[in-house]
Length: 274
Length: 154
Ligand SMILES: Cc1cc2nc3c(=O)[nH]c(=O)nc-3n(C[C@H](O)[C@H](O)[C@H](O)COP(=O)(O)OP(=O)(O)OC[C@H]3O[C@@H](n4cnc5c(N)ncnc54)[C@H](O)[C@@H]3O)c2cc1C
Ligand code: FES
Ligand code: FES
Image (cartoon, rainbow over all chains, first blue to last red; front, side):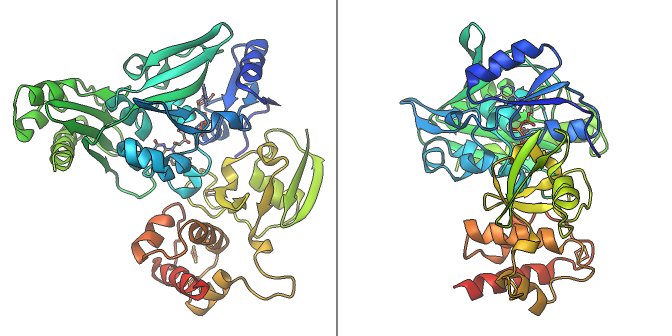
C-alpha cells in the first residue's frame, strides 16, 4: 500500500519546522517517527499534501533533570524513554509504560511527542502522562506556551495544538518514591490496550488514568477522591468508569470495558500500594 | 527527491518519489529482495531491517527518511565468502524456520535484540520478538535459535 503523493521537506530545527508548516497551510503535517501517521497514510485515511519531517531535529531528543520534574524532548523515542536511568529512578511509571508501546521495532522509531500529539485514547503514553500530571510545552510562530495534560485532549485524535504548533518538551513531575502500576490488557503482545490503567499512589495522594475508555484518555478522579476520603481499594475501584465514556468495538462491548476498568484499577491500586 | 542510502556498506544514490516506502526502495530500487513484505500494515515484522544498527519495520518508513543513513538487510549479514552470521547459523542448526518467509525479519530483529541485551532469558527473547509473526514454527525453535546464538556469542 502506497500513500497518496505528497511533497516532503525536512526541517533542521523547531523554528524551521514551524515556519514550513505555516508556509504550507492546513494540509501540511509534521512527520516525527511516522508510526501513527504513515500507517494512516498507507490506508489513505490521511492524505496530507506536505510532510514536514522533524525526525532530524535531534536537539529535541533528550531527557534532563529539571529539579522537581524530568524534561523530555518531544523527539525522544519510546526506546530511549524505556532505557533512561533518570526516568527509571524518578518517573518509573513512564519508563515502564514506554516499554509496553507496540514492539521493539516500533519503539526504535516512535516518539513521545508524536504519541501525545496524535491524541489516540488507545495509546499508552497520553494516559500515563495524564495520570502523572505532566505539562506539555508547545512552540508556535509567536513563542511557546505550556499546556496541562488535563487540558490537552479535546476529542478522538484531537488535541488543543494549533496546526502550526509543535510539541517541543514534556515535563513530568518526579514521583518521589510513590508506588505505581501500569496495567495493559490486550489479546496479542504488540497490540494497543483493550483497556489500560496507569496509576500511582503516595499516602493520600494518587493519580489514575485510563487507556481506551473514551474518546480521550480519561483521568479517573473519582477513584482518587474516594481513596483520599479513606475508601478501600475495592470500593475506590468501583468508581473506575465514573468519568469514562467507553465505546464498543471488535474487541470489547461497553459493559466488558467498564468491567475491565474496575478490575484493572483494583489490580493497579493493589500493586501501587505494595 | 535525490537520496543517498548506505545499504550493506554500499552507498546508493538516486531519485525517489517521497511516498516510496523504504521496503519498496530496498526491493525495487536497490534490487535486494531478501526483505519480505508480509502484512504491509506494520504488524508482522517480515520487513525488519537495521537502521543504524537497530531493527525497524521498513514498510513503516519512507525511503526519504533513510537518506544519509546506514541500512543493513539480510543480504548484509553473511560474510562475503558466504560464511553465515552466527544468528543465521543458529537458525539453521536449531530448525528455526520452516517456510522461511518470516526468517529474514526474525534474524534482523533477533540480532538487534542481542545488540541491546546480549544474554537474554527465554522470556526476554519471546518479548523481544513480539513484533515478528511466524505462521509455521510455533516460535519454539526460533526462540531456541536466538538463545543458541546468544550462548555462542559468549
Ligand atoms: C504496529 C504498531 C503498534 C503500536 N502499538 C502501540 C501501543 O501498543 N501503544 C501505543 O501507545 N502506541 C502504539 N503505536 C503507536 C506508536 O506509539 C507511535 O510511535 C506514536 O503513536 C506516534 O509517534 P510518532 O513519532 O511515530 O508520530 P508520527 O506518526 O510521526 O506523528 C503522529 C501525529 O502527530 C503529529 N506530530 C508528531 N510529532 C509532533 C510534534 N512534536 N508536535 C506536534 N505534532 C506532532 C504528526 O503530524 C501526526 O499527526 C503502535 C504503532 C504501530 C505501528
Ligand atoms: S510487512 Fe512490515 S510489518 Fe509486516
Ligand atoms: S517459517 Fe514460515 S512464517 Fe515463519
